[in-house]
Length: 112
Image: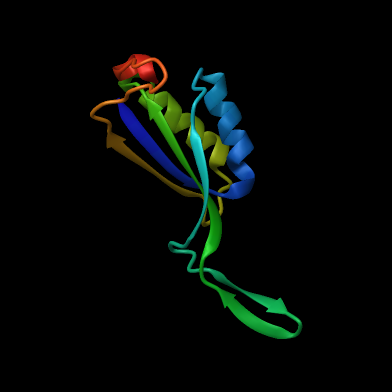
């Protein structure tokens, strides 16, 4: 089992959710976060004064998947979140030792 952590642009959240849903992946956690990478923020004009926005709004997705679904899920996220512009985001994949569904006590892939 793997945990996919994806950092994407906020307006791409619905597209990514739909793409994952089409694969049969129904569970994910989305968190509003702020950060920057190579983009290094940007400058904005407010009431005639210019200021630097260092941290840009992003959405962090966490999706638990079986090993068999990993590559399909990654490809779906890339296809749905890609705009071709800087700041599209990153995907991190980590191993999951154990998953337990609190309500039923199921564990492993049954709990996904």
